[in-house]
Image 1: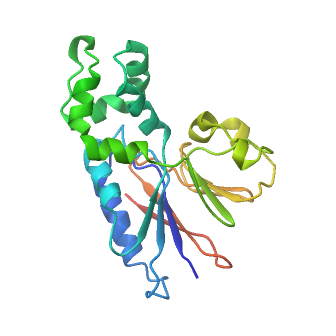
Image 2: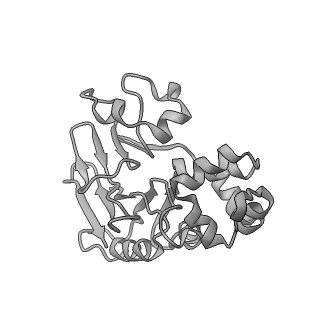
Length: 229
């Protein structure tokens, strides 16, 4: 039986991620320890918290004790756009969403409105950039679909748009439609994790109030949540 842990939005809180990895590796409910669990990172590794660089490195490295899947989040998408341009609007869209904390962690200055993609490219480095650009939008292992923000209800998976999978909110969150899969997502922060008939939300505010949540999933087993703060 495959045991899956999905970790919510991390937002630069490396110490929370390290604590969560430890919780997963020592989870007493893992009965069969001969089979590695799958850990799905739901996106938004950067921005808001102080150590986005360290979070990226931790997620990239993973752990020998589990198989790791990492998805694209809207914050990674915003940063990647800045690698290609010095357009003020593109950069401000990222910075106003917490990108200033990531720039600080990377040692990149944007004083006096200096938006320099060359500095950002050099600070991130080739390995991180290539990894970020390779991130998929979703991971499907039936009956679960893991995606950063959600999906457009009543639209086939093959027809979902990148923007919706990274940014959607109310149309997905308020939907009463039973989707073809149980959707596991982050992106929209809630005080407690949400366990509904058609979706599971696991963004509980790692940036603030500094709580990181994961959900443990296995077919025919009760849904369990793990939180660290």
